Image 1 (cartoon, one colour):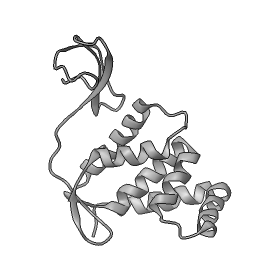
Image 2 (cartoon, helix red, strand yellow; image 1 turned 90 degrees about the vertical axis):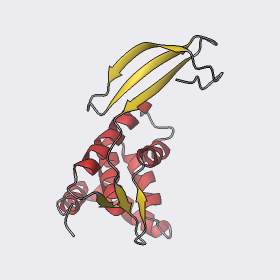
Image 3 (cartoon, helix red, strand yellow; image 1 turned 90 degrees about the horizontal axis):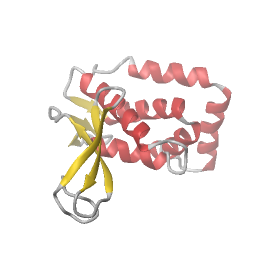
Length: 168
């Protein structure tokens, strides 16, 4: 593994741990050249899966795109990178469990929102504001009001959407 600090390719593994959901292995490494430590995550190479975008385009599934969206929503929140990787892994697990090898992007987005809603409501609102492309403050406030007034209804709506997964 190449060191992200000095680019040397000589390191040793200090610690290895499986993620709680079993989707990855987290490794702490130390560069033998500069003695700095860094973390890597090892994931299984998955089968080619396509994501169907809103406009009908298809693009290859990209785990990092989901992780980046979650990471952005969780900025300056008390959520560790390990937790972000765990959440990303559980979403990825759902994506790859679908019978079709093409999944609509809105299903993935809704699952990310539902997961964030349970993890951290501020992160949920941040993600929703970008994902739902609110056009103005009133749309944003409407979503926030729904979250605060009817958390059970939102949960049922999202579960209902997930219940149609894999069907066209």
